[in-house]
Image 1: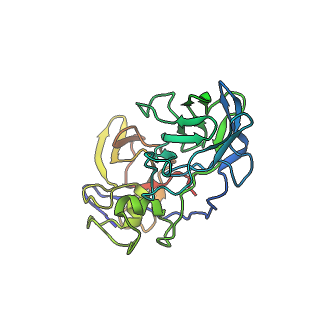
Image 2: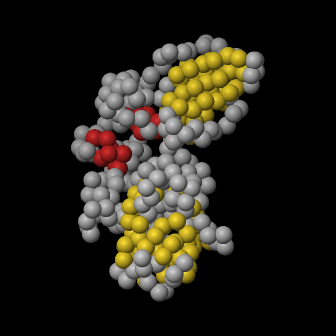
Length: 296
């Protein structure tokens, strides 16, 4: 664990408990389960609990259903590389999630053909996405057999209750196998409490902070402290796939960190987040990274 790097602060990521969730169970809300197609009408993303759509931390799976076109598959939940569909063959296709809320890739209907979730600019306001805080989906996808499908129709809307983190068979610390495959290309010999890049941060903490466990220069740290008449400004390295909170204590000899009262902060766009603490705030501070609460 890295402590006291540049400032008298700690870049810290705590281990959060995760729930088990069967891969065959849909994550979609039982009421907010509808999308709208300009050509074929309503599509049900949870026709039943075992064949509905599963929105994941790394990729999606399961089916939409429409009485005109039948089943639409978002992927089988088994990408060849373990963490993202390659979308380059009939056996390795599906809808991917970049962890920041952006969806891409392709769904398939035997009667309607391919349905594209791909946009040139993933951050376009109309591009398909999932809100990491609320679980609401929004944006548009397109297929020649179904036209435009709105994920954020005004009548019902579409919402996932959780983001399925995937299997965790490679370890007992709640780290998804998909993360291990993405970063180490194999789950063989993986150790959560190893420090693969010798930067002083365990692999499990690199996962929680979404930093690169193979890059010794990529870890959660406070990079700036500035005092002004407006208050105390903290700047830290951040990832758009994570949330952050600030702990503090008034003395280094205090054994307990307390919450700063600023709550959980969504990160700024880009690689750094800046937060202004109230005027006259004094003490020692640490930043905690948290996996989006929807991830289970």
